[in-house]
Length: 103
Image 1 (cartoon, rainbow, N blue to C red):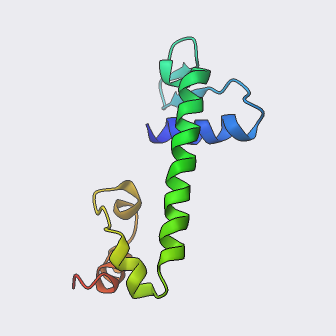
Image 2: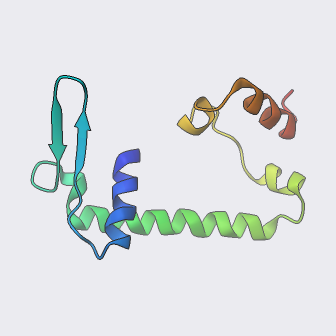
Protein backbone atom coordinates (compact mmCIF):
# COMPACT_ATOMS: atom_id res chain seq x y z
CA UNK A 1 0.00 0.00 0.00
CA UNK A 2 2.93 2.37 0.51
CA UNK A 3 3.54 2.20 -3.23
CA UNK A 4 -0.13 2.86 -3.96
CA UNK A 5 0.05 6.00 -1.83
CA UNK A 6 3.12 7.18 -3.77
CA UNK A 7 1.38 6.44 -7.07
CA UNK A 8 -1.73 8.32 -5.90
CA UNK A 9 0.41 11.41 -5.33
CA UNK A 10 1.86 11.11 -8.83
CA UNK A 11 -1.66 10.58 -10.20
CA UNK A 12 -3.04 13.67 -8.44
CA UNK A 13 -0.14 15.95 -9.37
CA UNK A 14 0.05 14.91 -13.02
CA UNK A 15 -3.46 15.58 -14.20
CA UNK A 16 -4.74 12.14 -13.22
CA UNK A 17 -2.61 10.42 -15.86
CA UNK A 18 -3.01 6.63 -15.65
CA UNK A 19 -0.24 5.39 -13.35
CA UNK A 20 1.66 2.13 -13.38
CA UNK A 21 4.16 0.35 -11.17
CA UNK A 22 7.04 -1.82 -12.34
CA UNK A 23 8.54 -4.33 -9.94
CA UNK A 24 11.78 -5.77 -11.25
CA UNK A 25 14.63 -7.93 -10.09
CA UNK A 26 17.63 -9.54 -11.77
CA UNK A 27 15.58 -12.23 -13.51
CA UNK A 28 12.03 -10.95 -13.99
CA UNK A 29 9.68 -7.99 -13.90
CA UNK A 30 5.98 -7.32 -13.51
CA UNK A 31 3.94 -4.29 -14.54
CA UNK A 32 0.92 -3.25 -12.50
CA UNK A 33 -1.69 -0.85 -13.88
CA UNK A 34 -5.43 -0.26 -13.65
CA UNK A 35 -6.18 -3.27 -15.87
CA UNK A 36 -4.66 -5.79 -13.46
CA UNK A 37 -4.61 -3.96 -10.09
CA UNK A 38 -7.84 -2.59 -8.57
CA UNK A 39 -5.84 -0.25 -6.32
CA UNK A 40 -4.64 1.63 -9.42
CA UNK A 41 -8.13 2.37 -10.74
CA UNK A 42 -9.09 6.07 -10.73
CA UNK A 43 -11.85 5.76 -8.10
CA UNK A 44 -9.52 4.01 -5.67
CA UNK A 45 -6.71 6.50 -6.29
CA UNK A 46 -9.13 9.39 -5.73
CA UNK A 47 -10.03 7.85 -2.35
CA UNK A 48 -6.34 7.51 -1.47
CA UNK A 49 -5.70 11.14 -2.42
CA UNK A 50 -8.56 12.20 -0.11
CA UNK A 51 -7.07 10.07 2.68
CA UNK A 52 -3.63 11.64 2.15
CA UNK A 53 -5.21 15.09 2.32
CA UNK A 54 -6.95 14.27 5.61
CA UNK A 55 -3.72 12.89 7.08
CA UNK A 56 -1.84 16.06 6.16
CA UNK A 57 -4.56 18.29 7.62
CA UNK A 58 -4.31 16.35 10.89
CA UNK A 59 -0.53 16.84 10.88
CA UNK A 60 -1.00 20.58 10.29
CA UNK A 61 -3.44 20.78 13.21
CA UNK A 62 -1.04 18.92 15.51
CA UNK A 63 1.80 21.26 14.53
CA UNK A 64 -0.42 24.30 15.20
CA UNK A 65 -1.56 22.95 18.57
CA UNK A 66 1.94 22.48 19.97
CA UNK A 67 3.82 25.51 21.23
CA UNK A 68 6.99 23.62 22.14
CA UNK A 69 8.89 20.59 20.94
CA UNK A 70 7.94 18.78 24.15
CA UNK A 71 4.23 19.49 23.58
CA UNK A 72 4.51 18.29 20.00
CA UNK A 73 6.14 15.02 21.01
CA UNK A 74 3.43 14.57 23.63
CA UNK A 75 0.75 14.73 20.92
CA UNK A 76 2.13 11.89 18.81
CA UNK A 77 3.39 8.40 19.46
CA UNK A 78 6.15 6.95 17.30
CA UNK A 79 5.43 3.66 15.58
CA UNK A 80 8.84 2.05 15.89
CA UNK A 81 7.74 -0.74 13.53
CA UNK A 82 7.11 1.72 10.66
CA UNK A 83 9.60 1.49 7.80
CA UNK A 84 10.74 5.07 8.44
CA UNK A 85 12.17 4.13 11.81
CA UNK A 86 13.52 0.78 10.64
CA UNK A 87 15.47 2.47 7.83
CA UNK A 88 17.37 4.81 10.15
CA UNK A 89 20.65 4.30 11.94
CA UNK A 90 20.74 3.11 15.55
CA UNK A 91 22.16 6.50 16.57
CA UNK A 92 19.16 8.27 15.01
CA UNK A 93 16.72 5.90 16.77
CA UNK A 94 18.55 6.40 20.08
CA UNK A 95 18.28 10.21 19.70
CA UNK A 96 14.57 9.95 18.87
CA UNK A 97 13.92 7.76 21.90
CA UNK A 98 15.78 10.30 24.07
CA UNK A 99 13.53 13.07 22.72
CA UNK A 100 10.44 11.00 23.60
CA UNK A 101 11.89 10.30 27.04
CA UNK A 102 12.15 6.59 26.36
CA UNK A 103 15.87 6.19 27.17
